[in-house]
Image (cartoon, rainbow, N blue to C red; front, top):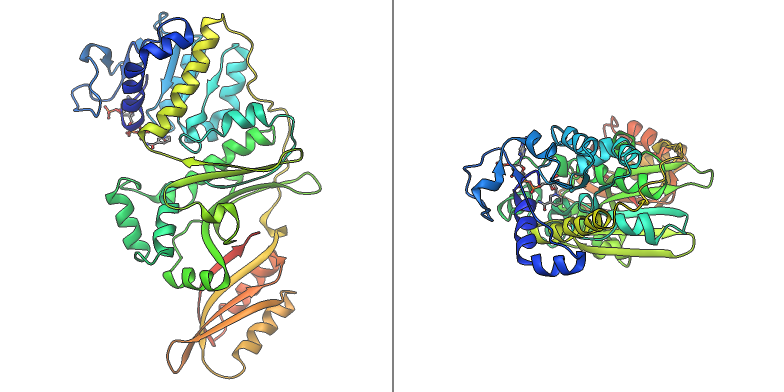
Length: 421
Ligand SMILES: NC(=O)c1ccc[n+]([C@@H]2O[C@H](COP(=O)([O-])OP(=O)(O)OC[C@H]3O[C@@H](n4cnc5c(N)ncnc54)[C@H](OP(=O)(O)O)[C@@H]3O)[C@@H](O)[C@H]2O)c1
């Protein structure tokens, strides 16, 4: 095993505690022989015999007695190179690493296939929630139309706390950090990068082609205020950081991660706190929701050990040919400009006659019609205006926003959200 942190300690503990039942399942013992770490002297959540700890990755990757490598060290390098080396040395790999799988999944899976091995990566998306295996196997008879997900626990915790009035963005983030849900540097979560990695992994599998994280349109949750959550509730919506992949009628694929308003009745709108959920829409099955704990030592261990047992089965049975990934399709990624959806706009304007008419004119000229307007006077001179539009084109909306921003009557365009569902 490479790494003995939050996940690695959980895996080591469970392999020891459930050794007998796993041996019965496999017909032979599954032994954790060596663990690679950076610092062998460190205090650990789960102490293993010092003799099994090493800082020498090569000695493990090249050991012919070792048949399976569990990579739970994280980060792009050296984890990516270690996985390549393990496959090169004829070993199955189990990984929880979303960054490596999002950026290098296609080439690693191709290498595994060539070597009649496998890279298993259930824990890389949604922690303990089974979603990779269902996409690989159980949903294979379907053509996947769409994936819609809430797949970042940190941001979902923050947005849920804000929606419940438990503090503003900074307070909710500080609480998430204190509870261990957010890292000291939360940028990857807050800016949507982590969700974009996971969406790239899921979309590659669901749509049978390579999707790179840089092909996912990505916006974070930084600009949201408590007022947006009050207005959303008034209008019957929840605000979530969503990860969406949808195939359009012409076969193009649109991939996006951004905060969005979801109708309160939608299943994803009710996924709260650190929970994650992925909704898959297939042509045969319709919509199915996979929901559960998207992080944490034991939920993630559940996924890692399941993959480990699956790969161990292959080793024990003499390496049956595995169904890995049909990555043959060249996917056409479509631009955000053509997206058609509804929009929410919150702006601060001068409170005098004619301002709303002027805003309506700018939107009208861009072929955007207004569905609802809420106006709240904040003091004598300024009002807060909340506009919900009918369905409009993204490019038109962006043009209208660029025209609205410099108007002297508009003090600020506070929040701009897409409205889904
Ligand atoms: N935590 C979760 O809930 C969760 C959920 C799903 C997926 N994951 C993924 O699981 C992986 C591990 O996460 P984690 O939370 O367990 O991380 P972590 O607590 O930071 O542990 C990382 C471990 O890897 C070791 N390590 C790091 N860089 C190394 C290097 N260059 N050489 C040797 N050892 C190295 C560290 O050694 P030292 O202990 O000696 O420093 C540590 O034991 C990541 O890919 C993460 O994205 C985590």
